[in-house]
Amino acid sequence: MLQEASVARLKYKYKKTSESFLERLCCLESFYLLQFSIKGSGYVIFSKVFEEPNSTHCTNTIFREAVRAIILNQNKVLLVHSNKGDYKFPGGGLEDNETHLQGLVREVREETGYVNCYVYNKLGLIYEKKVDDDDDNTLFQMTSHYYLCELNDTRMIAQQLEAYESELQFTPKWVLIDEAIKQNENLGNTLENNRWLQRETFVLKELKRYVASGFHKRS
Image (cartoon, rainbow, N blue to C red; front, top):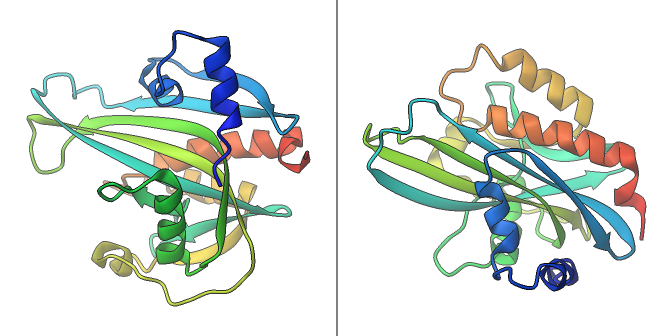
């Protein structure tokens, strides 16, 4: 069950704000840190814009909305490892009429095999703008919503990967946050056309700060 209390409190504070208040944070052209109370704890919401400098000429736009799971277990995080050596969070684009909760549970199941994923609170938003790979005149805009999640148990089924994911040999791994950051940064200048490396490395660094704060352990 998604925690709606946090959104309600923000909307009460900003009474003229629309239902999409948190979603619209990602459209800001700077980095914001907001702290508010969820279950008595201070949670940090991160927001970041990644925009290619040559994307302003585009006259057409494609929008995509994605959800990504942050799953912690003691001092490790559940990530997806590719045969290129990089790490990413489980997650992907929403299907038609799919809620964030439904999308998160499905993506975790498909990419990692874990079937019992519980969704808690949204931790952040990443907004990306780039020229579409198939059309130089089209802007591809993606909003990624990152949620704190937990596995209710360790029951797993076989992964259900898309063709490109199978080609990259996506493999679920529990990894130290520092290890994942180091590996991604080492690959930063060597992997071409990696769609997620910069984004996921940024979020890993924010997650490291979040874990160091101890907020994720408070009830």
